[in-house]
Image (cartoon, rainbow, N blue to C red; front, top):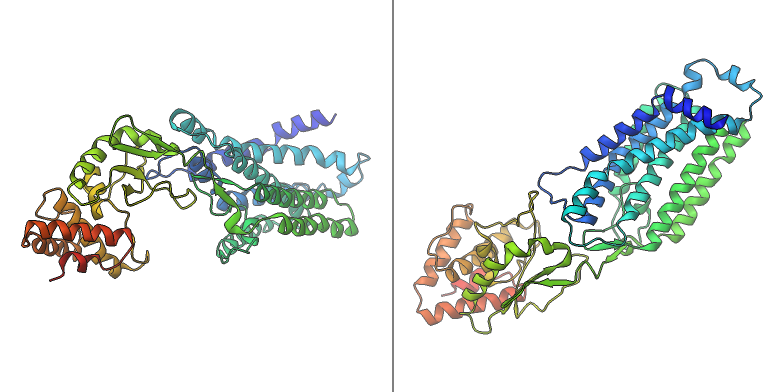
Length: 439
């Protein structure tokens, strides 16, 4: 009998379409034309991040579905049924939860298909964001069912959606201090996880406890027949919150590096050109420009002898910087390597083969002379006498002035200035322009 009721529920109600709509919404929200989705973990995380909007939507869908008896004016008639309350409401809850959780999980299939075809590394923990997301959506559906039956107003669903969205945003705005576990209670937060990391077991356990507790409270509210049982329905949620806060790690410990992902993969031959295993698909495009850049950098005293990708923030630094031309790898949505300069070779020569640093990220004025000095050193190594049009004012003018100053010096002094800039850049000094142009 229960199976038949479940079949009728799926056939006669909109729960299946809710699941299909959720799958399309999750897949659409996860799309970013500028992001390379060939990373297994990054693609799964992009899908998980859609919970910022999917979770309030699932809560509203549950609430709308929970007021169905009231909307059809059958509450009193159903209350007189001899069928036990749990047996009567279970098929409806199972149908809704199954369709919502299945819809969210189905929305990740495109991401996984692309990862299977293109990713060079399959992280062991990729499944946790998918399972946690499905559990989160299921909990939202059950909680919405309970609240919708408890408050069967037409305004309940939209108000719950707005309130849930506000709560998610509020949790995201909380301080990211190391002891702030509350941020991990947000359905859209896994902590500072990225494509080079995996989720800590304590974070998975704590979040799962929280979602199960929310689901239990929603189920208890939906099945409750008396005022006392409705009050008792809050207990699983409160208990789950307390347990989750005990189990959850601090936010900054919710993810840790995946050592397999950050392992170096190097091209055949010499000089050595290496990237992390996660980014191995970019290696063929990188080898030629990298070795040409190393040949130009060989003019410097104590030059770098290899090109090695710098991994961060969750991947450890994988090579000493002094003997390598380091760079941070970014891949466009079409799978090609992104560069801020006209060519990949110019990108590697920028700053005489060093990673840009020396000023705060939001310090625009502080970055201008640093960028100009780095660009001038790279252009000098490449034998260029003018800045490309890609630079903006006043950086382009500063690059031209730095190049003119360099070219006016004896050849030995020019080489010494560029070598001094490399040394200063390796130490993240902000005075690179003064090092290059001092009179």
